[in-house]
Image (cartoon, rainbow, N blue to C red; front, side, top):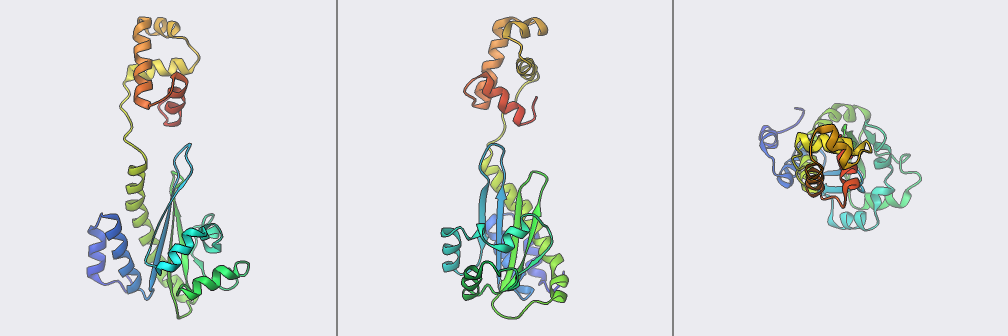
Length: 235
């Protein structure tokens, strides 16, 4: 691929450790003439507040300030990329209404660059940014390198996104077919006695299955287990 050193590309293709993978991605960005690389991964889990994970080789002072003052909420490039998957070039016009943000970023070497986002079918999002302190980026350079940056974003999103999802979501318990049957009828408003008659089971067996599902889903009660099962698409 354009301007990428073979050894960096090979290492990137074979690496699966999250931090080492990102470190190699930094080298690939630098191969393209960009000094800095940043990645924001936003993980959306049902019923939970979205979680944001930040990776970058930006100056430490900027990273600390960006997180402390929650700059990601006011960053125009990030805001535009949240609703678009087109490359967003960092221009003075883009930051017209955020002059203090722009000035602080430039002081830390983040003057010329662009942001590219990716949204998956689970509503998770990654935003990748490449930047350098000097050398304006024209449209020709943007279009010649945007494909490489988008590919980087896709790969980092796939590997790092999966890593964080696994950490946030414990393995789902195995629910038996019989437990699902009992749960479906319970969700339909049937009592334990009703379900026992429908499935030709004893009422105690039905209650046993309900207690089992409550335990497996870590729910507070039957209603909670039904809600969790519905959220996960089991019923």
